[in-house]
Amino acid sequence: MDGRRESTLRCTNCAATICLASQVISKGFTGRHGRAYLVADPKAPHPALSVLANTVAHRAVPRQLVTGSHTVSDIACRFCHTILGWKYLAAEEESQKYKVGKFIVESKRVSISRDGPVDFSRAAATAAAVDNGSGKKEEIEFDSQDEDECEDLFAGVWTPSLAAKRRQRRKHKS
Image 1 (cartoon, one colour):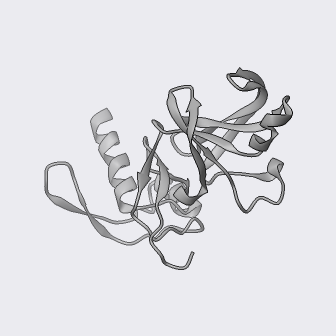
Image 2: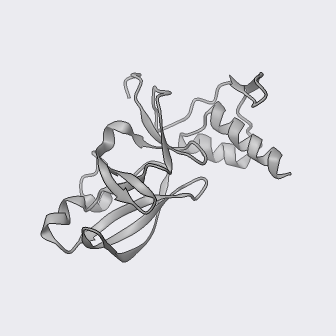
């Protein structure tokens, strides 16, 4: 990236970056939970090789959708395992084949972030002040002893706000 601010779609559960908002082809699709985005991987040399950052694909399954019979693979957040939508692997009807290699991302499962600039290759492991929920700012630094934070850092998604959210969740669970 060239340092410009770019909007991104992030997992609503853990704030992992999923894709750039500019990858959204259409906002007029319907998923299992209501409105959904049709998203493309513009860098994929072939539809079978298309991927979204920080997602994992489940096994391929046939699914009867409103637009016909398709083979799809559910996609989940790599970090919190929330099902975000699915990837189209095949379409029986010729008029639907344009979807192959593209993704349905449920609008209720992602949020649009305007934090930019975006760098999918690495995260900036710097300290930052984050609201700790009580209205006070708390200094958040990368914790090299935390396995989840290390995974986030190497995946290029670590941010002070993501670390703060995860730490808050752990506090409430204990």
